[in-house]
Image (cartoon, rainbow, N blue to C red; front, side):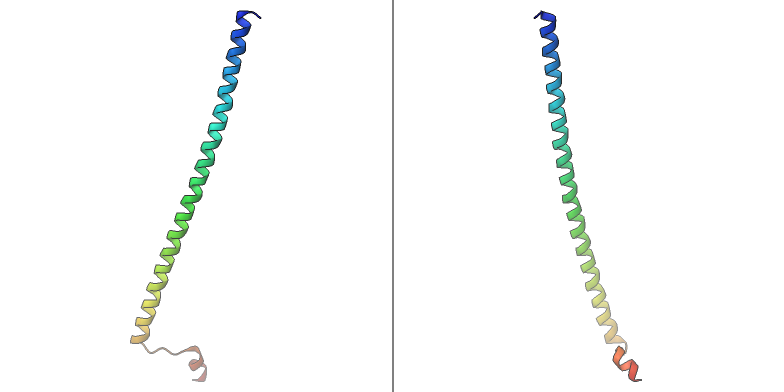
Length: 81
């Protein structure tokens, strides 16, 4: 085999190896990015649940306060009237 053929073979092997490594590296990065997206979604979902729970407690507190101040007729009593 000539020197030029050996150099071409070595260069093509190096180039192919680099491409294979780059593809695997890119796949692993994408997999990690997708996993981080799942974690961010979980954090957002938990924060939204906390916010809704806080709003529910605030609404319950306001309802109790309004029921103390105002006369409240339940639905059973309103049918009798």
